[in-house]
Image (cartoon, rainbow, N blue to C red):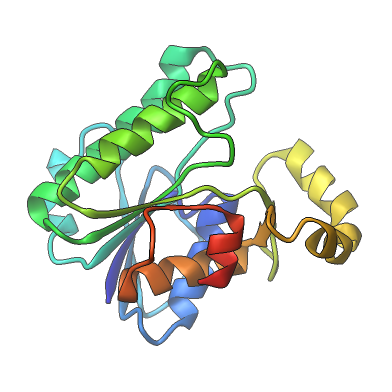
Length: 216
């Protein structure tokens, strides 16, 4: 399968990229983003594009793919709703609508989060919920991944210094967290493998929590 990957420089996206490059089922990866991944691989091609809310200039590059893994996102901490909505909703819908037109019926996997709720009081939960609903309404095989705690593995790190420090502290505790809270924790490796599985054979439901991701 040929895959488009948004957000390949972030923690989740980098983990997904690693799994795609290692999996024989994935024959090509097109990474779309504003910054280079720094990764060189025969299966990987990159398209640099700054205005991710308007993909019309690179539409020809996006044709002919089987799946899109949308891992791009930003923390809502310190952000007002218009800025958060632009990255969370506008960027994702630009990708979803473009792929729905170019490759209707293709697979689209969106990384959301536990607690997402279009009717929720928290700004981030509401915006993500609205994003999920809009993507699910498109003529795509759309799946929403709602991971809880994500442990980065295989050298994958967060670009945020505070998160890197937090993951360093919790890394020795991960085996305990996995035993005590199995339904709420996963890894970057499992997320990447689950996305490939969904693209290959689908999933029993469209909204997938940590336990569903791990099962896939």
